[in-house]
Amino acid sequence: MNKKITFLTVILASIVSLTNAQTRYNDEVFSSVSIQKDVVYGANATILPIRQTGHAILRPLAFDFYSPENDEKTDRPLVVLWHTSGFVPHPINGSATGTRRDSATVEIAKRWAKRGYVVAVPDYRMGWNPAAGTQPERAEQLILAAYRGIQDAHTFLRFMSKAYAENNNPYGIDTSKILMMGQGAGSYIPINAALLKDTSDYIKIPTATDGKFLKDDGNGGFIPMVNEQIHGNVWGTNLTVVPNTTGAPNMLDTLNYPNHADVQALDFKMVVNLTGAVADSGWIEESTVPFVSFHSPTEGFSPYTTRIVVSSVSFDPIITASGGYDIHTIMKRYGNNEIYQKEKLDDEISKIANSKNDGLDGLYPMTGLGIMDSSPWEWWTDDTSQNPNIQAGYDDAPNASKERAMNYIDTIFSYVIPRVCIVLDLPCEASGGVNNYTQNDLIKIYPNPAKTEVNINSEKELTSIQILDLNGKVVARKDADNSRIHTISVANLPKGIYMIQTIGKEFTSNKKVIIE
Image 1 (spheres, rainbow, N blue to C red):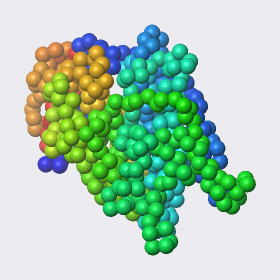
Image 2: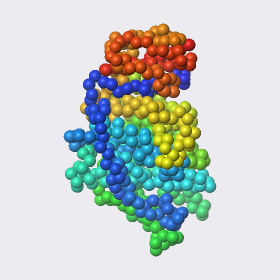
Image 3: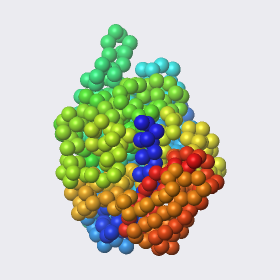
Image 4: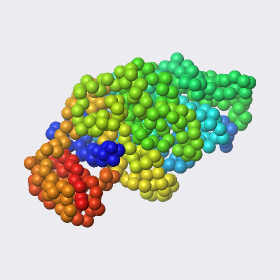
């Protein structure tokens, strides 16, 4: 059964976005994207130099802004995209990814912008010690790193609110249509920011399940790992002072500087999660915004259900958290994702997701090729001068390639776009998405099984034909030149199961073929 599901996932991951009529927000209606780089949205304390200086240092926080080129609209939905990192800066994190300029991050941002959205890709403060000697130490350091990311998210939303109100909406956004999306560790930021949205939500941290965010005070009692007076409130709007800090000016250190503290932050209406987790599932409430999650059931680091998070740097256990499956289980209990059924989505991608998500709409179990290959939409440059961690990337995902990543990103957008259109109430005909134009009944393929060649007869003109193996790799390709009858050789292909994808001007077709 798992083999069948994996094959279907590969099939749908390779669907090309072709529609009868291109529709803004649903399709890539813009051919080019403008990128404004390194826009500063605030400044706050980073702990990264503490080993050298003995204290935190104020550092700027910046983002890259993607928008459709030559777009005349000035009220566009905003996507805030948080890149992966492990909360350790690249390349120290040992990963082939970890910056806001990662290949997949840039590709995802451009795909949103080509559909008519605007996209902000912020950086955020990093720093913790995955190799700390004890599990409680690692737990405290990671929760504080994630907490700083949540503060930075709220800071960014206040910055955009201030820009909108005081500078005549320079980014051309609709403040009522905002979603936050994250990749890997970056997903922890929008997930937990959605659940820690008010200053009063601080109480959720020390009262978390089993006291997981309490630490020994050395006197037989317990104190919170997160302290508002030291680390700041969840909004990051209060100035903190840490006395008796060796190495700090005047023996005083600051771990949080307020940014735009007098501004009401913009609200976001939705979270798109790529392998993230919630620090405590008890934080999910009836009022939680809808989620869409892409998560591997075999994920080795960030849990799919509820279990110990394992460091991707040191492989040590850190803390119990809840991933996509359990998040959506609880949200179903509250009815948070019922809005997706407003349009009764019946596209092929939704059908495949529903075949393996146990009825948890909004959850797409997306599996790579092993527990280390948990983010198959990622790829990276092979230039070691730019990325010294290339080999580490291939050690985790030997089959990683741009082509494979693009296929997975195709699937992500095919699944998420109709749901975004519903939640943000966008005029993009969500129920008539690209996959409703997949028409397998137009195509006849024979013989099947085949040995040396496959014949393809189509009722409509074809533009191209390609054959993909079970890993989503294109192993044969042919230009169809708008004709309807073709023969393609398979004599040199190893025996096995393949998918033949035929593409026309207004449809795609995917059919399984067995080569003997």
